[in-house]
Length: 275
Length: 249
Image 1 (tube, rainbow over the protein chains, first blue to last red):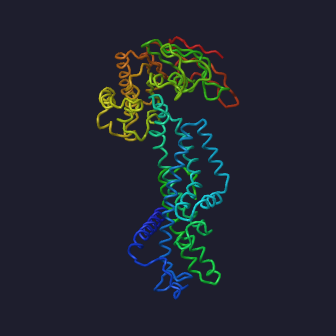
Image 2 (cartoon, rainbow over the protein chains, first blue to last red):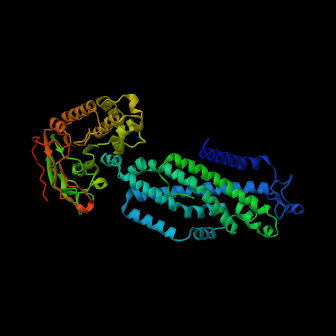
Image 3 (cartoon, each protein chain N blue to C red):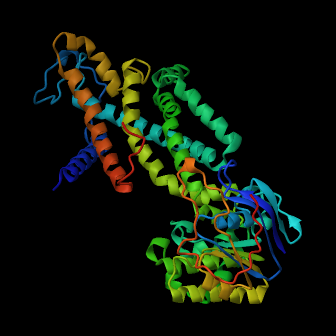
């Protein structure tokens, strides 16, 4: 078994465990992840609490799983929205050229010119804290790279003889785009979506860490790392370590899966979309 | 009548591939355009099919000047041409089954209802079985795919056919079969033909008239590293063709 196969199997195993955990644990374990028990605050990892408890005595394992659930939801939805928007913009710009292309690409430049965390903070600041503003914030800042990649791909496809054949057969611009160009870029766009999920999860964590994401009582990995800062200074490492690992390990596993998909999709082509 | 008048075309306005070329094809006439690789004959074919906008000159289709190129050409002018390209792999959408590939021009122009009957008529003519029609391009040979591309060119009953090196990738029997298909269609419909190629023997047998693209008509540019164009092995000398193309520098 080559190292690539092993990496793929490990990534797939971790992702399967993660998905299973976030789906099954909330149903199977009837504990409240928000239940406060001040008598059990800051217990180190042990038999009763495998990951220990936080500064108000909440079970960290349970909160990590709930936090990951929120992170995955935000990551997947935001990546999907960003990919759909980016693919539509890139395909329109590439297929139509002329002023739609110039308009859309200047819009991409405009969004790229602002640091995207700053833009993301601006978007969440417009709404009350919750999941959907975070999704919107991540989507608004992440469609740009997909739009660029899809446009470049469409431009290279547009000069193929089969597009000439479609034009000669009487196909409208719209039909050429929908029938011939979009299906050709969908695998690339799908890959871009998967690669974007880890990025979106980091963004959600970063926004929550800054106190701009989810409300503080909601379990979210970024919230947990943020509220653990005080105890970390006092030497209590577990409230920081476990949520941190819950951010890093699933995102690495996802990136590993996406990398394997990319290698399979186009062995000689290194995509512009890297983590 | 299909008239190309004073066409200058290429991919760089400062160094056009085709310079001031005129060519006229009569109704129902088959004209073969012979020339070495890279001389610009494919570009001229693309201009004739309204797929490439020339830098100068005009195309007149049955007395009506072309009003645009590619998507800017009115649909009825674009679909007056059936085009067959040199490389079937490149000219077939890899995601479409051959049945859909052939029917695509009808579906794209709102003649969906005719699609099934027309594909059913054409498949045996070009020699594609029902089993082959269900396959995708990567599952068939170049020859089988080119048969489908010829069927696609004929499916919407064009008045003009442009065959750009249609048989360059094919074996002798497929070449004979496809030329036969094109000729049968022309007899039935009275369509005109512009066949581009470098196989003088084939084009002289196939067409009513062949036109030789004179080599060494373009000044070569040293800056681009091109060597002067000399007649290559593809252009046997001494063939009795009438140079109708007027090429001025």
